[in-house]
Image (cartoon, rainbow, N blue to C red; front, side):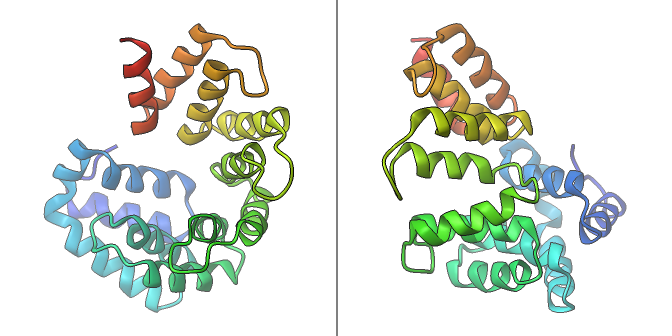
Amino acid sequence: MTYNTLTDINAALASLAQGSEESYKALLDCFIDEKAQKQLEPHIHYIIEKLTDAAQAGNIFSRSFLSCLYLYGYGVEQNSQKALDLARLSASRGEHHAEALLGIMYLYGCGVVQDPGRAHYWFTMADEKNNTIAPSYIGHIIENGLLKKSDPKQAFQYYKKSADLKNSFGIYNVGRCYEHGIGVKINIPEAIRLYQLAADQNSSLAQEALRKLKK
């Protein structure tokens, strides 16, 4: 989905502020996808301004979205501290996107001391609210043995949960499991199918995996 007019953008921001999962994902995709980002570019300053106003007024969904933009530098200068502050405010009120973002920050040490245990806590909190990406990161922690001995079969189940929620990172990870036999038998055709599904959702990881498999 693209937003070509201020009317469309205002409608998306209003929907986002009400907690619309569809608007959150669609608007974020516009920041991630290069083609969509170019179309959005004339309005990015306006969007950031509106999100900031809503965040300062206490809207937890706008705070979470803005935290994501600052964490990855989408449309703004990357700023881990701002991302952390905004995520903490929203997570304190149980907003699942913010909880997942805190998990990512603790997992990779973005603005905080790296702490897989705290990361797992926040991913679990988000997972309990059916956040789509959190199960993939729990799977990552389990697969890589960051808290206890690696359990590939259990990791695969978490990746699959994320994929079943149609999350591109989850779909990519299930494809990776099928490619390399992580917790499941190797199945290259299934890996390619899943990589393509994730690539169609603008997953750069899946696009790269496809490129390597098709060499």
